[in-house]
Structure formats: C-alpha cells, structure tokens
Length: 188
Length: 180
Image 1: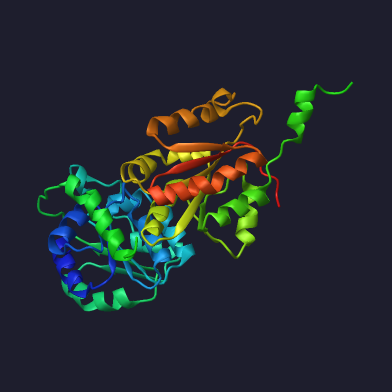
Image 2: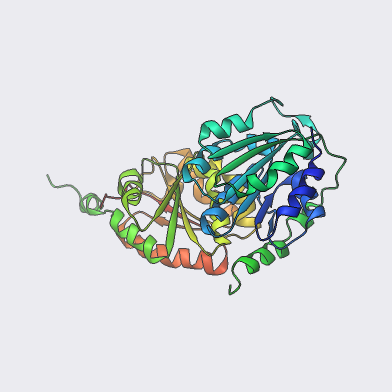
C-alpha cells in the first residue's frame, strides 16, 4: 500500500507539458505538490474528471492527458470507461487512486472497497491496464506507463490520506480556468 | 369533408434533418456527443454517424457529454450534445456546475420525446416535457424551440453566441426531423 502524496511526488518528476486533471482529495494534494497552469480541477460534478479528460484528449491529440481520479469519483462515472475505450485516445492516461473511501465526504467506505477497477477498465477495452500497490514498483513503472499508447489505465492502491484542507473556492476559481485556456489557446 | 384550414396547415409543417445538419456544420461543430434519442434518431443521429465531417462520440450516459464538451472547449473545438430530454434532466448537476457556474459553452440539442408539436412545450400533456423550459429559465440557460424548418435559422446564431460569450444554450427539438 502506498501513500498518495508519495506517488504524486514521483509522478510530478515525470510531468512536463501534460494536462493533469485531478479531483477532490487528489486535486488538493496534486496542487500542493505541483501548482501549474496545465492543471485542470474544474470538473464540476463528482465523477466527471475522466470525461473532461476525454474531451481534452480528443481536442489536443498532440498533448498527453493525465487523469487523477478517485475511486468514489470513478464509481459515479463507470460508463466513461467504456466511452473512453471506444473513443480510444492514444494520449490519455487514467489513474484511479483507490483508498476505498469517499475521503472528501467524511471518509465513509465506498460500496465495495475491493472493487477491481483495472479489471473493469481492461474489460471495457483500455489498451493497457496496470495495478500498482508498492511505491518502488510505481517509481519503476511510471515512466513506462506514461509513455504507453493509450488509453492507459492504472489503479494505485493507496492509504487514506492525512487530513486535508479543502479550499474549493481556490481550486475552482475562474482564474484557474482562464489560465488553463490561455495556456492551451494563446490567441483566445 | 375537408379538414379545417388550421389542421391542413399544421399537416404541412415539417422539420428537415438535412437543414439542421447544414446549420450545425455552418456553426463550426465538429464533435457530436450523443446518447440516442428516438426523436432525433433517424433525422439527425443516423446521418451524423455516416458523415465524415463529424466526429461522433457515443457516450454511455448523458452527463459525460458535459465533461467532454468542456474539455474540448479548452482546445478551441466546438461540440454539440445530442440527447433526449430525459438525459438532460439526468445531467442537471453537471450542467449546473460546468455550464452555468463555470460559464462553459455547452451546446445541447435536446429531443422532446412525446411533445405535441402543435402546442408550446409548457402546455404539453407530458409532465417531463412541460418542465423543460421552466427549468432552463430557472437556470438562466438560453433556449430555442426548433419545431419547423423556419426555426432552423436560430441554430447557428445560438451556437456562435454560446462559444463567443462562453455560455450554455439549449436547442429543443419539438418534432421528429425528417431524415435527409
């Protein structure tokens, strides 16, 4: 079992001009570790991160898109696994941080904390699927996972996080959206 | 005995899918995001699925479209969401946040299943149809009823406005479009 922030710290070393979509607890930790213009947090509704990611992947096939999903979030949008697999964007890498809880909503368990997300992604038709539980393994594999032809899926088995401060007003600030758009469409 | 004039006139009213598709193309839409709707199935979705000018993304559930369209908008790509009013109702939370609160250019073409074209939707016998325009009004989302060929001229200006002002719009399809 890994700590999510330790995974993200390693992931950050591999991120250059990728667009990173993150939600809730993952967004809080990613933003603390790696604040940057190409972060995308305004998913609007729980579970939609993977769908925003698909739109970005289809709209910018020249860029890699990294989705940092949560397990409770992905459960709300399982159909997106099938949609993404069918659309088959080669530039999309979809992580789910599985800690078995609705962490941002009181830490209550998800209906089945042992649900096999990588198995579902594989059955849906993702090109490559991984399951990683050890930090050393994550560090060893992450470069390869990020470089594979997508859509790629990886379950990261993580512990519950330290207590986080959720400043949604800041995460969802319109200034962040303007900054992202300006980075992606310089002439807009 | 001849039918009353008003009934005869009503019988002539049509909505042609080809005209709608031309307006969608003229609006710069490349991506169509859709869950099938029987109102628009033959007249719009099927021809779209065969048209190389469009990239059709078939989704499993309508709220996915809101996220996909938002992501595309950050890439300067225009998308049209083609769904039934039931899917619109199912997607309200995503529309509330992404389209309204974040002011994203979410363009929805919504089939009013069961709508009686001779009546305004607010006077429909179907509860689900009757509440659509009041919900859009409550959310401050601009909407247009497209129920005859004369209404097709509303489509391009509505989509252009949505993208230039970064606001959502709903185009309500009030009768089954005739297949091209």
